[in-house]
Length: 160
Image (cartoon, rainbow, N blue to C red; front, side, top):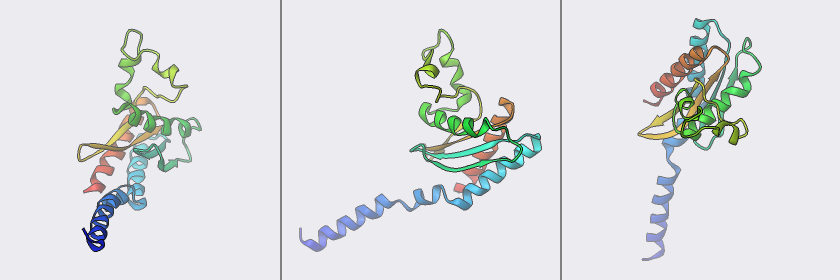
């Protein structure tokens, strides 16, 4: 192999690694539409929430705290997103496993309070791969779940 062939191979590998799709996955304008969808649902339910969009590395990509949201929601929304990523499932499905007698009983205490086991956190799936999660907090758990579902639906729509 000569130097030119090696340079061409390196360029091809770098082009594949840069993955233009990944850089657009958490585009600010798309995330703003996701936040807007969540806020619209929260307004419909007459509740203030915090919405957290987190990527698979658990880096917060966008966080919005509605003016009428409780302060505690700004702590819980990121925890819900983190929990959905860490457990690879919606937070509403975690509770059954951590109850007394469950296979993961006491996991919440073992993780120093980082794990949230009630509704409002949903993984983001793209092409069968988890790419992040959205967490919503501030209302009743049913409201948080509905708001989070609206946000995830908008995120999925924006990906098309």
